[in-house]
Length: 465
Ligand code: ARG
Image 1 (cartoon, rainbow, N blue to C red):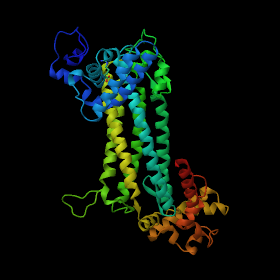
Image 2: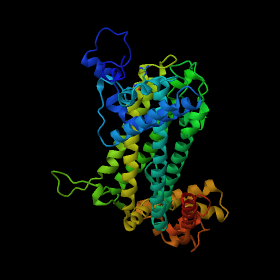
Image 3: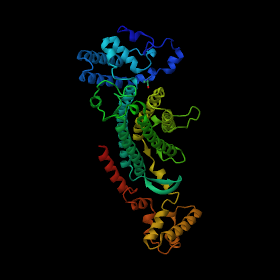
Image 4: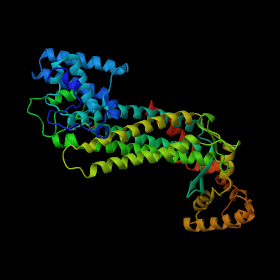
């Protein structure tokens, strides 16, 4: 076959096939429509492979130089939008290889020595995902910074904390925001842990069994900045657990985003009225002129379903596959790409939106004063005066019942009224019944006292610097 024939023939693999593929089957089996996005990784992998082949004496210096030049030219072509992707050439790998041969002739045909698309694609996906993980980790840091600064600004703003969505105890708004910082910090940690297992090299496994050429796989790994070489060729070409793990980590990020979204949506509703979000992240209604809807958090909550769906898709894709590579694995890409796109957009938009989040302290305070939020503080007060906790709990339950019947908050009962429940109550009880008193009393590591919140803000600032 002449040098240019590979690029021209309608199918890329072999002379064995005598029947042409229908357009439908071509479309069904091809991945170039979506996997072209891996081109940078594909070229980086090929450059590293060729460099090693030359160093091992498998490829002449001349062929290596031609391949290098050709691949760099192709990168420039793709970058400039001048590369013609051909469906007939199935995927990103065959498209680039055919173009290489078109440009540099016979040297291009030598590039695939000791390699298969099976180890090539596994390498490409890993290289690409590694870069995306680094970006995602950066976005998680940016989001945490926004939340930490908000928390610092609003350490003294008090809102009701809920359990069962019933008013439970007052908490600092800063403390509430820092809860999400903890979640996103773990998410970032998880991403970087997944990265270690993503950053391993399949190349050299060839189709499934390794290769008869004296490859130096460690050298390729070092060139590509990979931390290890996959140690079993069958495993190297067939497992996608690194992608599944990443999707699980991404799903957890979205889960945290979704919980935050749910709170933002509740807080923005008229019934809570705890916050405002910048107009740029809300939309109006086409029929109700008064509406301002929290579309961005709602969509993020919705998109969480899609990312979790991709995780389930990938797990299901893998579960029935015998060793080693199967074409099923081509189906790993679209869910993975969409997961990355959704996650990155969501993290970016949340950092911007939360920078404009404004609490309404009056409304928060009024809500905290409505549900006897300091009842536990009264019980603790009685315990400190010698009453066993269970008895104190009972005494306070009676006081709450009375206050509820009167239609006032516990803190609004008079000293005499409170004394009637237990003679140990004195004037200093109002120190603990106030919202501020309740918060300040929780001055324990991880507690909601504004002093603790400020200490945490300082810790996070250092950690994220
Ligand atoms: N496009 C394929 C994929 O995404 C590349 C590997 C194809 N290998 C093969 N033996 N057909 O998985």
